[in-house]
Image (cartoon, rainbow, N blue to C red):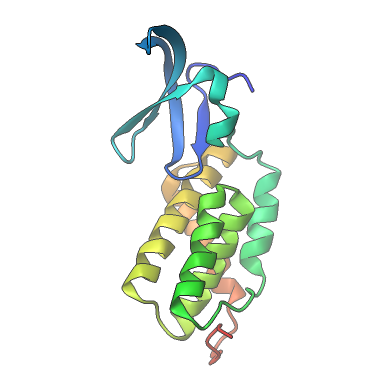
Length: 172
């Protein structure tokens, strides 16, 4: 995959960043080219080897059409999460670390329902915030809208998808 300076990309852990340059660095007596990726929301800069880009799971921002799939996931009823906290945390982290928008949407949906129907642990609350932020940023980039507008749209879809007065806690 070829990237260009100024292009937005998605890192599976850090979320959305922008290619701000290409630099050469002398590592182990050999010059290697690196993409410089800045993540403004985290005040973080990564140097990713141009030749190892695929191994880092960095990808382009999803297409606007893919946002339909994301909103479809958010509108559905989530699968039950494991009752055991460690297994539940592992499932959620797997979804987030995949870096794929549909799986991040699955995590957001499951945590939103769990929050609405029984509450979240402090770790789950942090994962929920992280997942929502990752999804908001990518939806905003894919649809050329402001982060606040994307957040409002995602939250509205989540709220509309939850049945009123539902008493079940999504766990098995």
